[in-house]
Each structure stands twice: as structure tokens, then as C-alpha cells.
Image (cartoon, rainbow over all chains, first blue to last red; front, side):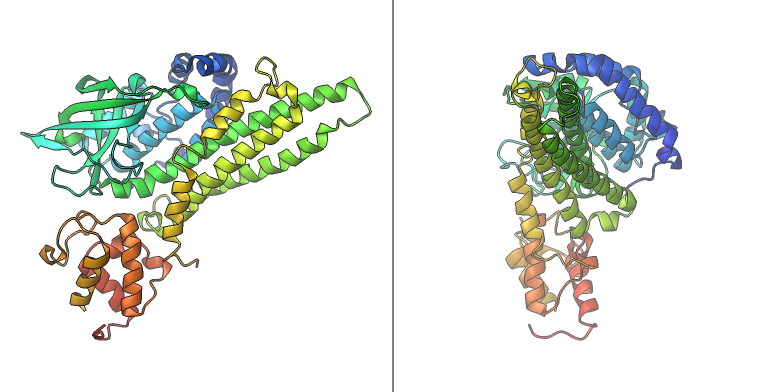
Length: 395
Length: 85
């Protein structure tokens, strides 16, 4: 059963405080490091040191465990803010919060996971996830690997084509079949701890964009105790939390990429206008156009977040087909709008935006934006919706 | 009705185990039914029983077992003793 966050979660002052901190960290640390993170395809260490110092990693953990008990819309706002400075940092932060969300909402009935929530809040530890697997054709809702139990101890071996920032995480949430004789779709989530986990690198991460997420492939082998398995089936955790959380925090950070692209376009046009006072620069019309699309994107993201917040504590509604389709559409729309907005902002800035060495450069934004429709490919999501629409009746 | 439900489940749920070995309350998802297969099962049940599952029934839980499917269909058909199919 999904667990309710304390009511303090939607406090406006907490939201303001979190956003101000994200902007401060963004201006002083995340933004200045973004080009190096991108160029070197390295983990944004300095960003996470700063986020830890401001206790931002445990923001969603309820106060009774030592966190700040913020809401999903607060997390979305933080992701949008960070996304304006460095999409890789924002993506790592977002992926971490998806795992935190799963523990907060589905782990509170289990002593191990309650203790883990306190530890995460106290030490500001970073969570990664290993959901995709070699041999399942990208379908995260089926697993080849299985949890093997022997004398109360479990072991697990997974060929993971991607574990984003796996090398830098303190713990990893791994999906696997419930038991060696379980069906491929009968999955659970296991929280494995770094000390008990071996990651043998099997792949590299040298991509067009989102380079700082360090999403390398690994052969993961882990041991632990049986209580590290989350009590609910993965299918329920996925429908009620992992999928909606993912699509909300991802589209929120993509909104951040788009927002910064438009901000750069605005700054460029202002500069042009100052050169010839009294005339409106020709690109200003294009800027007006892209602003309208940015507003559409913001509304789309906020609407999706609100819809989830409204239904968050209604597991029945969250497991319905209508909700799944809506959350899928949020991801598709967010990714398409991000690419469109950054592309239009580039048209506004022209060759100045095309340069890598100008303050109006949009090359990193554009490269990062193109990843949005490819990570969990939109065609795959359209395929799911096409199937669900066969039985869905819009009421 | 159970026989027909079991037949449709056997044809469309793509279980990893034989449906005849499952009890009425056995979890079909644990038996290997994917969400994609559950959509096909819903469509086949709609066709076979000449019903339409309303949006409120399009939940994971409504199709999780033979018993749950029977309850859903009985609710839609007003518990009339069903049809030979």
C-alpha cells in the first residue's frame, strides 16, 4: 500500500526554501561545472557534494525519518531548477528521487526499509537503479535474473546494459524475478548495498548528450538478506510510483533545459535590441513564438504533476489504464516539446547559439534534449498506449 | 461460466503455467500474465461474454484471478446465469 506523506509536505515555505537552494547551488556550482561534466562525460561530483550539503537528496523522505517531507511537486520544481544549469545533474537527482519515492511509498511497512530511510536521510546517500537487462528487449516489466534464497540470505546476478551513475551510488534498487522458478513478469525490487555489491563494467557511456549521467553497463552481483526485497510486487510499485514519478521528474527537468534555452534566446534578443534602440530585432517574433510553446510545456508538466498528486493515495486509480495512458502521454509530450523548444531557441540565437564558445550557446541543450525521446523510446511508449487504448474508454 | 473464462484465459493470458493447474484465486500475474497479455485477455472476454468493461474495472486487480474475472463479468451481466458462450 502506498503510504501517505505527512501534511507538512505541501508547505509553501519549504518549496520556496528548496527552490532557492537549488538556484543558489545551480548558480555557484552546478552551472559552472556543466561544460566540464559534459565535455569529460564525468559524474558531477561537485554538484552532488553541494546538494548533499544542503540536504537536498533526502528532501522527499518524511520528517519522521529525518528528511524534509517535501511533495512530488516540490521535487518537480527542484528538477526544473537544476535542469536550467546542468541536465545531467538534474537527471541524476531525478533518478535518485524516483528510487527514494519507491522506498517512501512502498517500504514503510518493512523494518529494513524504514531503517534505510533514516540512514538515507542522515547520510544523504545516493540511490541508483538497475531495471533494464540484457535479453529482455528493453521491456523493464520482465526480468531474466532471479532472487535466489539460501538460508535467509539472497543472491542476485544481473546483466545490466545500463546502470546510471552506478559507480557513484551508495545503494542500487534492482528488479528481478521473485524466485528462480517465477515467471518473467513476476518481479520484485531488491535494495542492494554497495558493500555487498560487485559491479563489473561491461559497457561505456560516450553519448551525444546527457553525458554526465555515466550510464555505463555492468554485470551486477549482489548478496544480502531476504528483508532487502520490497514487500510489494514490482508491478504495483511500477504503476503506482516508479512510472508516474519517472515521467514527472524527467519532464520537469526537461522543462528546465527548455527554460534555460529560452532564457538564452531572450538574453540574445535583448542584446540585439540594445544595439539598435527603437527597432524590434527580427528574431523577437520567433522568441514570442517559442515563449508560447514553453508555456504549453510548463502547463503540460504541471498538469501531469497535479493529476498524480490528486490520485497519489488512491492505489486503485493509479493502477487504472486511464492513468497509465495519461502518464505515458506526459513523457511523450514533454520530450517532443523539449526538442522543439530548444530547436526554436537556436533559431532565435542563430549562429551565436550554434557556437560552443558563446554565452548563448545551445549546443549542449540541443544534444541533451534529443535524448529525451530516446531514453525509454517514445515509440515503445506509443506502442503501450496503442495496446491500452484497445480497451480504454474515456469517461 | 468458469469453464469459458478458463478457456479464454488459457488462450490469451499467455501464462507460464497450464491454466488447469491454477486455483480460482491463483494470481494470474504471478503465473506469467504480462500487462500486454492482460489487455488481450480483456478484449477476448469482452467478445466472448458480449460485455464492455467500464473504465472503473480496467484495473490490474479486476483481472488478477479467475475468481476476480468471474465477479467482474457477473456484475456486468447482472449475475444472470451465463450463456453457454
